[in-house]
Image 1 (cartoon, rainbow, N blue to C red):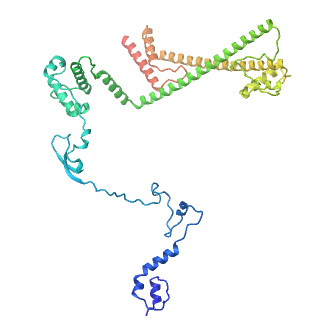
Image 2: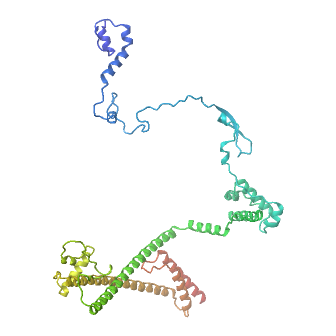
Image 3: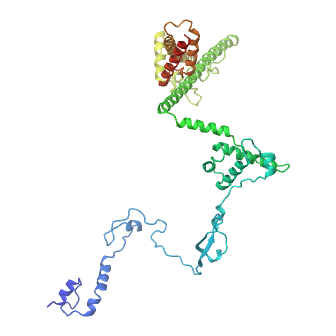
Length: 462
């Protein structure tokens, strides 16, 4: 027979004072309460001192759940959301019928609304906007709106459709009675409608006020749609040619900008050389006429673009005169090496005695050498570009000569006139880049077609 200890072991109950005693009904009924009380007493522990509440919340709970990766509710924090119930009475709602003013069939619908809104209009009726199509009389049509290309019945049919479909001219053109009346395009319908509206606004406008007139240019709309259709019907070869031409145009623009920049830099160098020579001539004339003054007050006045600009030592304290001979950091290594090479070729010392006169003249000499070096570089670039343009020009002339030889046929006497005209037409159709970009791939096809057409013309004349 099972004892009380066995029963407690099966029910996972702790042993009491009377483990060996019989089990009562009260012990079996209150077994869950005892277990939960024991578990809560043993598993609860206090948050350590110095640990923040957020860090403590990341620890494992008693159910061994993983900590949350994302916040579940950032606005409420750790508090549970409670329903906010007021003390006022709930507003009553009622299932009531309503009609939509946009419908003309008188249909009745039902929906829930508050009792306070009973009898009011449908709230969404304000979004039902209609277009005000003008109405004309018989007398106004005969006096002002008559047109030879339109009958009154056709005009009335047009205005009825405009009123029915709210000036949606694509739908109007689709529903237009083309069997009873003439076949009209969308532009024709728009032009007739807006012309009548403009005439009626002028007629009905009062004295002293300018009416608002709507003008529709049907010709412009037709041309726009025609251009759009041509653009849509392009072949892949034409699209590729257009992209190629756009890229070549961008290259031409970039080369043009580079040339303009080089020309500006060259002009700056030329003006700098001219100004330096003129200023030095003026200084020499002034020194001959005037009495010799102190050298400390005289300073070389050179423009910023003329060669090298040496810094002025105006700070207080002791400075060495040899520091004025030091080249600034703005001068590149190539220029420094070119200056040293020219000085060694001319037999000039690279580090002369830094007297005041020698320092001034040595700095002027190096500035002039830099200016000469830059002018030589610009001259070499100009000669290189000129040579490239000459070669391109000769290649273009050669291509034109080949085209004339292709146009000539055996036994075609006296055909100089048509051949020149064909060459002119070909030159107009060709897209030639002066900078040196090659011709487009389709230009060869044009050239062949022009040469074939010229040969056909000559054959017909013969």
